[in-house]
Image 1: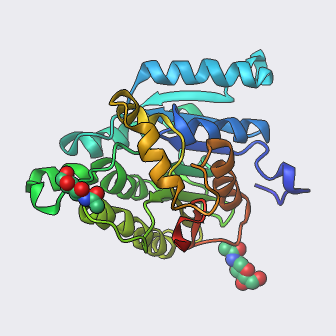
Image 2: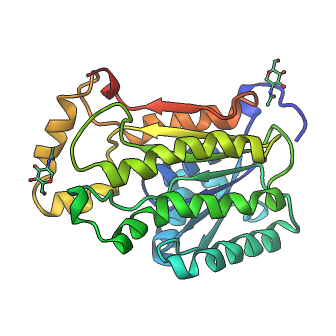
Length: 273
Ligand SMILES: *[C@@H]1O[C@H](CO)[C@@H](O)[C@H](O)[C@H]1NC(C)=O
Ligand SMILES: *[C@@H]1O[C@H](CO)[C@@H](O)[C@H](O)[C@H]1NC(C)=O
């Protein structure tokens, strides 16, 4: 891409793959990228959720409904939840993207926001297969995605791969060893991938609690108000994050062509308490 004329142009015409793009932070970011004139490819495990997300994005951004701009939003299903088929799923996702975009190395940014419920329970309660399962979506999947990026991202420092991590590394709570082993590992992964994939930039966004669909189970169990109050009592902002706010952290790493190997945190000040 040529250098942008100004800040609001930086994502104009860019092609951004968002893995986990049909709900929560992923679809929030997709909406922001469209607002700045970029094109999005959203991927998630559910074809139905993808088509709901596309409808929502088209109604928020009427320009994407123009006939000559029908490539502004593309949805491609990809199931990251199964260890046995993970490589095959991700390989076919990128093959389909290359077909849509007319060849390899056509993407400007890849953002990984997919995440399943965090496995929080006493250390001894995990079997080894459960420990492995706990890392498939959040840890193994982004590494396998990274293996495909030299063939799919434009090889410049304007391009980027952005990971998502969470939990607050210095916040000590029982029952988090397995979850935090993977979440902390994502921070190391981002730093080392920044070296392996250079000049492409690689960063991770470290989130605290954010109001998303991930809380569905907690809500159904009638526990959400209590859990939220507990989190909020430990946050300097006093409130759980909103998608529209934390999406700014992702936009930042996409647009600062000099940030790489960094962990950007947006967690409502949780670390301070
Ligand atoms: C850890 O999990 C056990 C069993 O579910 C629970 O009794 C305990 O309160 C948890 N500890 C914390 C700090 O959440
Ligand atoms: C970041 O800025 C420094 C200093 O200007 C420069 O040497 C470096 O190449 C830049 N990095 C990227 C990825 O643009």
